[in-house]
Length: 102
Image 1 (cartoon, one colour):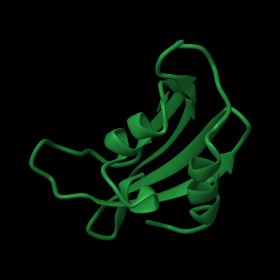
Image 2: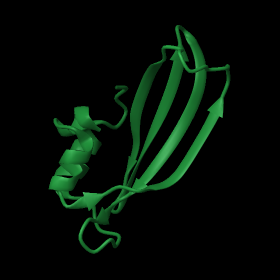
Image 3: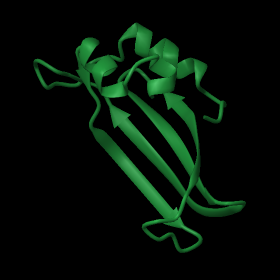
């Protein structure tokens, strides 16, 4: 998110007046991962909707796929705490990240 928004993610989202609670999260491990393991993460935007967006995350130990995850967020106005549309700048930033691996 920070790479797409060009600033620390939480700071940028707060400036846009939105919060992004998790709507859904799925994680599957294929190999054991311990506390001190160094992981390489590949993150991609998989969908951008009117009120939500989703990522996939692949975690590698060297060249071994250790886990796969998907996570979806919904946008909520920071003042009213109600579902709100994605701000245009957030939607644009996320849309540029679709099919890219970060």
